[in-house]
Amino acid sequence: MALVPVVVVGCGVIGLTTALSLQRSGRYSVTVVAREAPGAANGESQEWASPYAGANWRPYAPLGDAQQRAAEEATYFRLRDIAASQPAAGVRVATMRDFGASPHDRVPSFLGYVHNLRRIPSSEWPEHAQFGYAYDSLIVDVPRYLLWLRQEFCSRGGIVRHGALEHICNAPRAAGVQVAAVINCTGLGSRALGINDATMFPTRGQTLLVRAPSVEYTTTAPGARSDRATYVIPRGDGTVIIGGVFEQGCADASEDPLTTEEILRNCIALCPQLLDRGFESLRHPSQVPACDVEQLRCRAIRVNVGFRPSRRDGPRLEVEHIGGLTVLHNYGHSSFGYQTSWGYAGAAVRLLDSALGAAAKL
Ligand SMILES: Cc1cc2nc3c(=O)[nH]c(=O)nc-3n(C[C@H](O)[C@H](O)[C@H](O)COP(=O)(O)OP(=O)(O)OC[C@H]3O[C@@H](n4cnc5c(N)ncnc54)[C@H](O)[C@@H]3O)c2cc1C
Image (cartoon, rainbow, N blue to C red):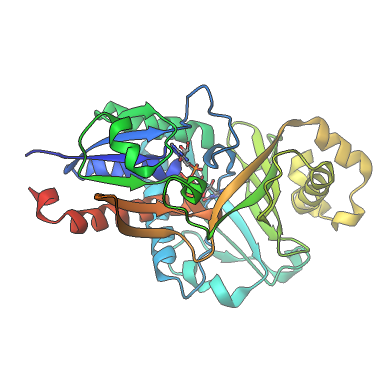
């Protein structure tokens, strides 16, 4: 059976997961072209989002968003399978302590399928919380997982080429092959490339990577403002990502020292295990002494600033014809790219199958 050649533009978690899903369908031969890629010399550039994620699985989808809800659910089960069968991938099951501020808009979306669900009594809720659940979540060790995705793709004959495109129609030339379609997974890159999506914007995040081997759980709690959340994500190797902020439209790539201070204080209050203490020493952030903040600061390995590829109306998954090329868009996954990646990638394969029709089914 002849494979249908396609090119995926973008080598973040969305591009790689989409490329792998197309390849595994057995119908496509896939080349990836990207400006940044895991393992490349420019891998630490702030021009792409994927290396800067936490990352844990924590459902965001509002009740009315059936596509995102389905993507979260599909990815939950796929990441569980990967955790169980692929130790090199850097994915593991861990208990999530999920505190939220709006019980009515998203909670029932995950109650039905997450494993080991239990309610956390209100006596244990942090400030601003209106619900608290514990359940099995997934934690992704981002640097390892991105490399694993790339290796999986390449070990099955996939090719990754370096290339900074000026227009999406240049993708086939950069890939060096005649293609039946271009799959656009360029995140914030879609503000240009002839796509010119003016509804895309960066949502700035700032996190710290700290050494804190006592932390067992991943915990998320609402912040004092809508552009704040307090989260703690142990990577399983003794290091922990703590955050953070969701600053829409902000493109400042430097560390904000006041935000660093706020993150250290809030995270100690939410998770005393960061300083090797039990949960009985939970405190309000204002009661965390300066010496504790300094102690955790001393354990910091680095401060990260990254930009989530946000889109006013949510992710774009659709086919467009540009300059005679069939272009399938899969971008705009904002704060939830890892936890929805397999769901959106599966949907992208189905959409491409139907867009290319019989040609892809031969
Ligand atoms: C601080 C922070 C914490 C996060 N935490 C989580 C979390 O816990 N869970 C979760 O699910 N998500 C999380 N996210 C969100 C997640 O990181 C993103 O949704 C995801 O990385 C988006 O992936 P992407 O592949 O679409 O985009 P990107 O990773 O930005 O990749 C875009 C790709 O397109 C390429 N590209 C762009 N323009 C061009 C061009 N002109 N020519 C060629 N190539 C181009 C880039 O080089 C890159 O390869 C977090 C993000 C941040 C910043």
